[in-house]
Length: 121
Length: 110
Image (tube, rainbow over all chains, first blue to last red; front, top):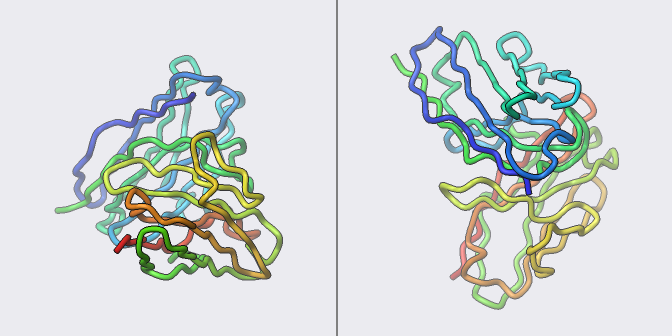
């Protein structure tokens, strides 16, 4: 059974960047992709992008592609999501999750506990 | 900003049946893409509940079932229990946007 452990909460100033980590353990996590989604307070979830462990190929939602970089360190089983030029409306809970494909029509099988990012001056 | 629309809340007494709708469009659910449902308890990680062909991960009871018709899908919970009180959301795929999610529904057990 794959488990995902995310880094801790962050408080950032507008215009800065944040990098959230997601460490996979257990099971055969190398066969999965890591998907990143976020949920702003009172809102639904948004897909940001994803990357697969084997090939390190990242794909992004059009909404975020100019501000986000998703990367992976297969040697440690850790994925990273960096969001730049932060704005107040980026305040949200950010989750990583496993999926069979980077961008396909499949389920998010295992989720991390979430990382709260607060953007405030 | 959510592409799929759900009712904000539904409620029912223990033992009753409740249903949650997930309304989409021709570029997502209506295009034949699978719909997945998740349970989200506050402060916990969301949990995959059931896939569009009623495949449930190990440990998920068959009280949770799904259906789809046209551009909408539904999650039914039969024999409602107090531990079912949670947020539920749907997820599908959109031919233009990629993975898309529902607005979320809070289920209250009366």
